[in-house]
Length: 88
Image (tube, rainbow, N blue to C red; front, side, top):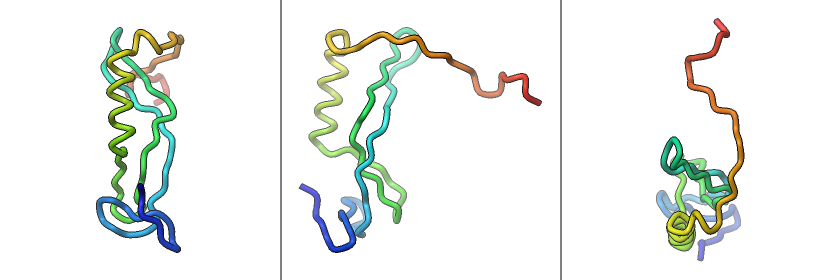
């Protein structure tokens, strides 16, 4: 459980108040083995600049990755290599 103060959640790393929970997408692997996990809860601290997962979130990510074929939905997405655009 996160420590709360009048100024918000305390950062687990620097101990300052103001850390906040965000939901982000994380990618694992590459090419045909690429897996993107959406809505991952990450705590971010504006003071030290660090972002981190709770132990529970890390365990859940491991479970999702181990069972990705069971849970994953295939989507087509456009992909562009950085530096290969015609805009110059």
